[in-house]
Image 1 (cartoon, rainbow, N blue to C red):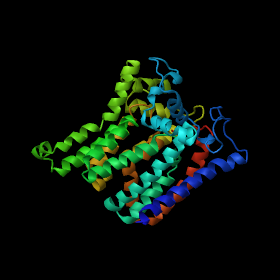
Image 2 (cartoon, one colour):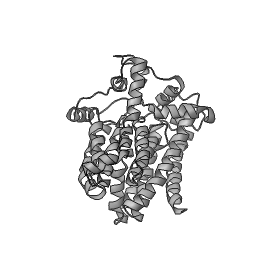
Image 3 (cartoon, rainbow, N blue to C red):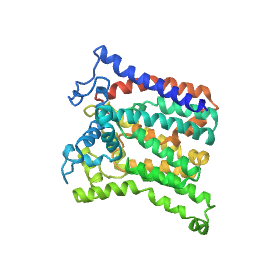
Length: 374
């Protein structure tokens, strides 16, 4: 029983320690990349490095609510791009922890630890004991896993999707539907986890229409998009535009252009303020590498997980491909496949870890120094 918690807890603590040291030791030595933008001045010293990029916007929504002005390219007028569950949670917890940003850090780290514990249990059942250990370490040490500790949606979304699929595999359809609904209130692509749930529901009934129709628990599947629909209803009532979350993306230079145009845009953005040179090229390569894994993912974990991963990647490719190194964090089937493959190749796993640790440290330092990494 204790081992179910020990390995995920150790992976969590060691990986978070690496991140904390990478952030604070260079700063203490006076090493900086960019001068701060001033947004973190009011934050406590330990919280201050995390007041970066989207974290600032989630904290603003938590404190002041949403703002939206149609056709405006002013980011301050387009906070509807950020889905509501995380800022709502931050607003609720802010009085307890002394501020929205601090609350966001507590929520993200708590959700990440919980997600690691559940993923460890899931992988022991679906893969093997070694792969379960490798999975939590791969997720914890992935070069952009610092996002799991930042006031971003990654941890919350990962936890909810893991709960949804574990519930579906255990035929707890109402829990799966509720978890998926909350995921769709965290990110628009949360509805896509419904692919796994629907697939498992069909498998549970041997894909027989009559059997599915007799099981009234199919109503639980109707809950999956409820979070998204609730947010759209709020936007319609408040701003007169149910799709304000999509329209607001233009203020961040993102709009639906199709995969080809998105790839070309990402490749041609060689240098931009606060971005690493040629970082977009790496993201495009990473995107195609993830696509290559779809077929083996189908064979090892099943069609539901493969289709969920494919649908998520394609949805994210409709606009600029920036952020692939962050968005892939929540695609735990990809990490599970790599963990299973390396479980019989421990030297390969150790090599991956040896590469990930220093890159994670450098990435965390760059992120907290206003270098955009996704």
